[in-house]
Image (cartoon, rainbow, N blue to C red; front, side):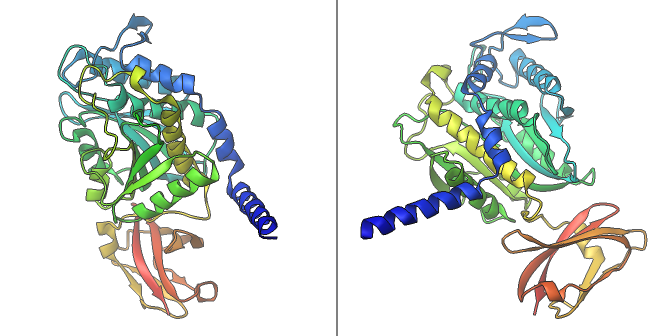
Length: 396
């Protein structure tokens, strides 16, 4: 009898897991090709030649002072253009240049999820493959560009490639203060840095997280994806997460972010920052699993219009009053600037689930929302003619 109950329970759990999957995300993961991932690594690490502007060349090093750094930038830009993306770039000093490929959302074009990796490498030698650090992450972003191009998403997805991480996270540090300058809102960032090394074949990957904004919500989604899509990684949660790669500037500025890496504590790559960091040392099955985890996490969020993660409050919030707070039946939003029009209001609960959404075309709306909300803490995002801001509200 116990055995029968166990089989029934296992069946129910399996059905629940299948039902939890988004078929589009599963289709997207099925499109990921290990040969494509490894070919990108080979091209970025100098093992295979690349064609840039019709000329065959080899990227011998991506270190920021080497000619291969610019070659890598041009090659990756060319690939994203080939897949049909809108391209942007950001030169943050005389040497450094970030690359962005943008897939605009059809419903929320100004709300962005971002997948990124740094493309520069080390050491300072004329030949430096940098396969694991970080051609692995850059190739993951390029393969995402290839696969995601065939799908549409309500939220915008940005594929970012950072320069000069190895000399102090300069590319991502320069970028973060520009968030919101084009009326965009960063919903969450996933970083990929060193995904290929798993010498003990235990399939353990690190997820770096900190208690900043709703970074834990991103972590929870990654854990869900690992189970729901049968990715089969062992996830080692690092909290507080590693501050020496490109997720750190997002945390430091109050944005939601996580970082996916191979396991650093118990199985660190001994070829890190040496000329022996090559693809032949990868655990290829592990590498593909790490990439799929990043893809599933971003795709789940970018497809989900019922749930969202939190957003950093900005200084615009100080120019608005929300009262009463706590509230019982209604809450009023009042602007101290008559030139700022409110276009929309979205309210989410503490899990990130959207519980109220309304389009508004006047300055100081009164919201009659009490009948749909239970008592508790919520986050209200107010969209204005400039940008959005988030405040915490309490329903009594």
